Amino acid sequence: MSHTFQIAVFHGDGIGPEIMGPTLDIVKELAGSSDAYGFRFIDAPAGAQHYAKTGIALPDDSLKIAGEADAILLSAMGLPDVRYADGTEISPQIDLRKAFNLFAGVRPVRVAPRLPTPLALPEGRDIDLLLIRESTEGLFHTQGSGEVTEDWAQETLRITRETSEHLFRFAFDLAADRKAAGDGPGRVTCVDKANVFRAFAFFRAIFDAEAARHPDLAADHAYVDAMALWMVQKPWEFDVLVTENMFGDILSDLGAGLMGGLGLAPSADIGLNQAVFQPCHGSAPDIAGQGVANPFAMILSAAMMLDWLGGKHGIDAMRVDGRRLRAAVYDVVARGGSGLTRDLGGQAGTRAAAEAVLAELVDG
Ligand code: ATP
Image 1: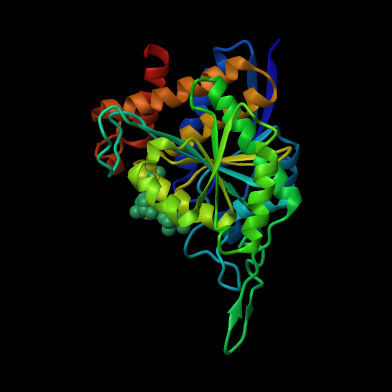
Image 2: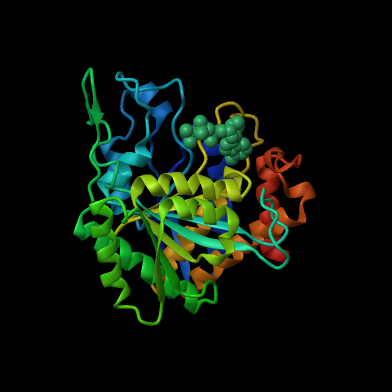
């Protein structure tokens, strides 16, 4: 019996709507040829342009649509020239993270054979790791309310047992899933600075307690500075990395760098009951309206949504389609030529790039 999922769609700003449109077309095509699942998409207005028009960045109605949906697809948001009165940027994605307590920021770092990377990977090596960034506390705890005086400034790093327990359980479950699917060896690495900060020793102890519940999975630790080095020197050795908010913020950009930039960097922000899927890049106002934006990070984010919904609701066909969609994007990139947008060295427009993915799905 087919299960229909309600998806809240935030079209975003700048190139946001240009990459969301073809992504929805692809997802509709996949669902259309499946008898296991279907979608109902509901537009949720929000963002910088919406704020410029109405004075509200994230209307209550949109928040309600998001809360009632099975998942949230969100495109690039924010515009550098549209800001709140205090000068900060419009970022409904951060408001959603707070509203739904989306503590697990999942940032895949994948470089399949023949895909662009600034690293000279040894023959036969590819990169396929998942970085999980705690996204609700850590050094972002006092975000926007840090103390600043004439002589000093301070922010507070906060780590709670409850969030850390959820975070580590999530990380081990994901590693188990990857192992079962043949995508990873089943290893979780806690990235911290437990040798210097008591808060990180606390974080690590909670990690160790969760690790003890998973004797079938490997668990180890790394200091964040060493991990920055290893992600460049031997990234193929890692499977699932789990870390604090600020460390994760930095390492996820390092991960995007390994993938040759943000054009192929999807993300998911996941909580106990809700999840947002969005590309890592911004709204690229410099190329908006030209039809040349690369849609692949958005499409890969939609593939993560299929994985998550399929896993949560026990619908294998959805997970299979998530894998197929990801593989189709990587095949188009690996083949090069007519399916690539300018940022990837090609000439294709957004639509043509998305159509190349669709063709790969149908014929590939
Ligand atoms: P933010 O702070 O909102 O994340 P940013 O200021 O880091 O954004 P982006 O909007 O990500 O910047 O753009 C950085 C550069 O990358 C710009 O030159 C932009 O044109 C380019 N870019 C970003 N996303 C894409 C995309 N999907 N396709 C093509 N080029 C892109």
